[in-house]
Each structure stands twice: as structure tokens, then as C-alpha cells.
Amino acid sequence: MNATMNVAQRADALEAEMAAELDYIVVKSRLHALAEADMSPPPNAGAMIRANPKLRVLMGDDPRLPAMPEKPTLIDFFKLRFPPAAHLLQSARLARKNGLSEEIILACLLHDTGQYLCFADHGYWGAQIVEPYVSERVAFAIRYHQALRFYPDHSVGYDYPEGYLLMFGSDYVPLPHVQAAYSYARNHKWYMDARMVTTNDLYSFDPNVQVEIDEFTDIIGRHFKQPKEGLGNDNTPVSHMWRSMVIPDAPL
Image (cartoon, rainbow, N blue to C red; front, side, top):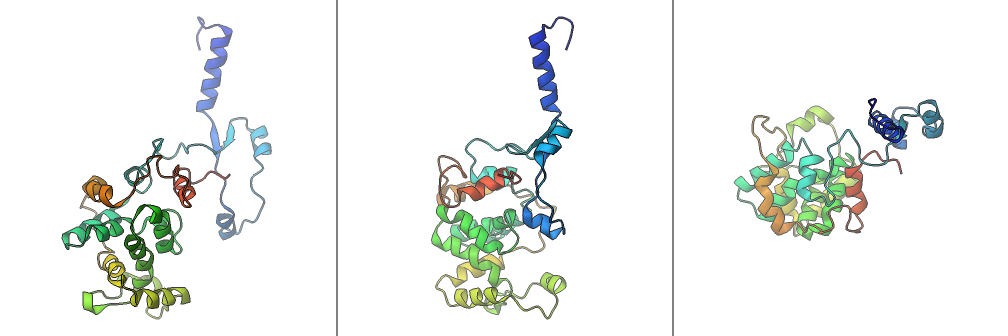
């Protein structure tokens, strides 16, 4: 503000300054609060804001995250929500190097995207969020790679991952639903599609190797049905999942 401004201009300048200084309340999910042994009610936004007028509950774009375009594409999610995505990108490049089909390369590229929503059962989450946009085979491969990881298949050179021995112990037994999923997938006509995701699932990717999502633009264009409205805006049964990745901490 300066002496040449009239009252209205000064008011506008003050409002702009206050808006720029807003702090946002990020409301934790109920499960997050439970895991931290905090079962108190959700924050009383009204009382908090009365005590500090600069506070706002986060509802729109999260200022901590890069802004998404109005009609986001899969590539936008890779660039703005999935990073660091080196594991996915290097797994897809390995699948391409091994001469696998474009659909399996795409499955490798997408196989862990479910983890950006939920770690538990990430194969199911990952398959579900892409199901309207990919073939049934790609969705199957993503869904069942989760169970197949725990079971060797020496016919294709897949051993039980050494990292799993360190993380879970040598006596770990997969959960019953994982055992059932393995039995189902092992006898399915598309078993080898899911198995190829596990064999190209890089557990130790090279941090010095840079792979860009643009390397797979053609494969995505041929095998991923990008909605013209943008992911999250196309009114499918999974649109809300993509919107949740755009604004992951919106409480309502």
C-alpha cells in the first residue's frame, strides 16, 4: 500500500495480502487418527478460525502440491502426482527391453499406481482405478501381480524376492485372500500376463538411471483410453479416486 491509493484500493491490497498469508488446516482421516491413537473428534474449524482468522480448512487445490491442469491426463498424473515414479518407469523399460507386448509394458508402468491411494491391496486398487481405460488383460495383470509376488515360478526365473525375506521374515505366510488369489490366477488363461509383471518388477532400481514418462507416450496413446473430460471428471465409477489424488487431503 502507498499514499496514492484510495480507500477501496487499500482494502483490496490488504485483502490480497491476508489471502496470501492464509494457513490451512489439513484434516487427518479417521483411520490416520486411529493409527496415532488419537480418537478425539475432528478439528473444530469454527473455533480454530475464530482464534486465528487466517486459518482455513483445505478444500480446494493443495498449495503444497503442484497444480493439476483442468483436464488431467495419465501423463499429468505421472509428472505431478506420482513422482518419484522411477520404480514404475524402470520396470516398464525393462519389460520393453525384454520384448514383452505393449499391453504388458503398460501393466508394468501402472502396476503400483494403487499405492498412491492405499498401500493395502494396492494391486486391487491399481487395477480398479485404471479398469475403465485399459483392456481386461492389463487390469488382470495389475490386480494379480500383488499375490504372485509371494510365489516363485522357476519356469520363468522368478524367485521369492530377497527383500521380502528381510522385511517379512522367512516364516511369513501370505494372508488367506492372497493365497486364494494366487490359486485363482495360477489357473487362469492370463496367468503369464500377471507373472510377467512380477518378473519385470524391479525391486532394486538404479537411482542413476533416468527414465521419463514421455518414453511411453505412444504406448499410452494406443492402449490407455484417456477421457476427453480429464481423469476424475469423466463420471466413471472410479472418477472419485482420481479426484482424491488431485486433492488428497480435502476433508469433504
